[in-house]
Image (tube, rainbow, N blue to C red; front, side, top):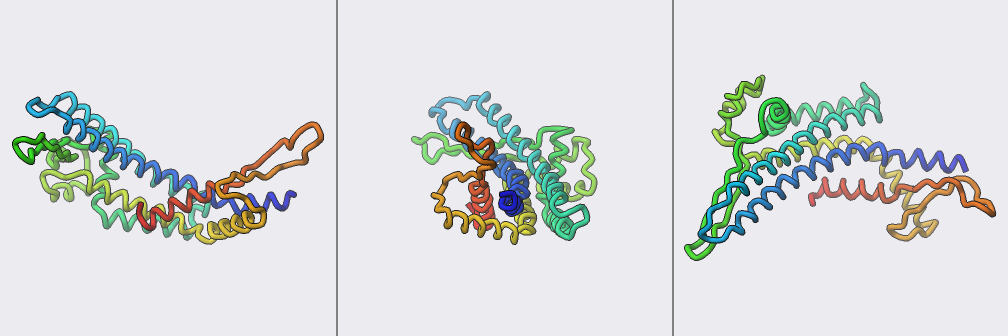
Length: 272
């Protein structure tokens, strides 16, 4: 029935409107986790060094390059998230819509409030045009006792003066960077920036709360009436089968895509 199909497409359209925003943030979060995983992997490799043997310099250099790659990927994905979310809100609500203006105002407020936002947004440009995005992978080993092997700690550091002496035009950030300590720990800064982007994602999705609730109710009624098993993938058959051929077209009803969005939103609201 054409009316049934039209109603279904209208109700589930919210899923495909929100997916690009959710996916863009998911890439940011995955890149952030890869930074942490890279550091932990390198630390465990250093911990495996046998007592009495020197630390392999190539291992340390490999860890530096791996961390640099992960940080660069993170910075690129944060910029992509901001651009893609703005464009998606423009597609959904319109160029001068109250929703887009409200989101942009929240973005500007977070930018004004958080040094991490201002700094890492610009650090992405610095990394693209001038130098790698941090200065040093600080490796420190401590021996709990003379009999035990070294236990390593790794920090991702940015040298303030290195940023200022590189010739890059930091603009209004120049004064703020001058006010920072000589050595900045990058990980807390990236964590705070990630939190800003998570809040912007929730703000963008909130404009479709009503439509998302209607979609959930529609699926609840459908699953109850048709007795669709949990995690089944229901399809809508388009056209009539014949004695010699099955229907020529099927459309997947995106219940699992809806559940994915809900799970991600719950995690953003409540934490992992």
